[in-house]
Length: 124
Image 1 (cartoon, rainbow, N blue to C red):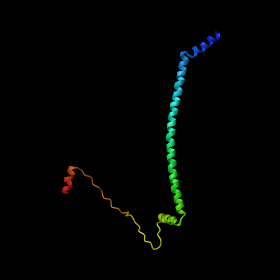
Image 2: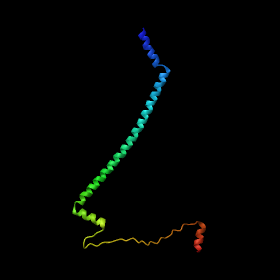
Image 3: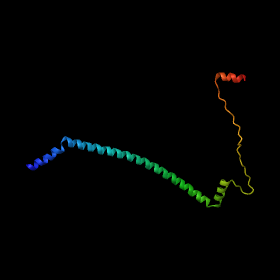
Image 4: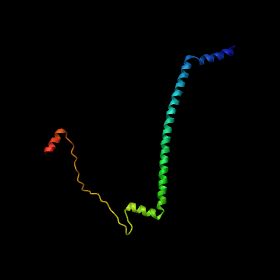
């Protein structure tokens, strides 16, 4: 009989209000932790997408650079590169050089001053 009362004593302790409040607080703390963890998972997913996009861009750039390197290994590719960078021409080829006019005349755009400005400009 005493053994039965001891088991019932533990049950009374576990079902008491202070213990239930403590367990409720622990459940709320764990729930808050889970919600915070879910937020971190979302941020991690976004960072992963950004990283995957960056990897795709870098692969495209790598492919482009690989093609450029392969192009520069040929005589035609080297010639084209030199022509682009230094503006050279072969013997017998004509070359046109476009020079911008550094002494540009700036025309001031006069703004409309309204109804009276129209008449003033009409008679001047």
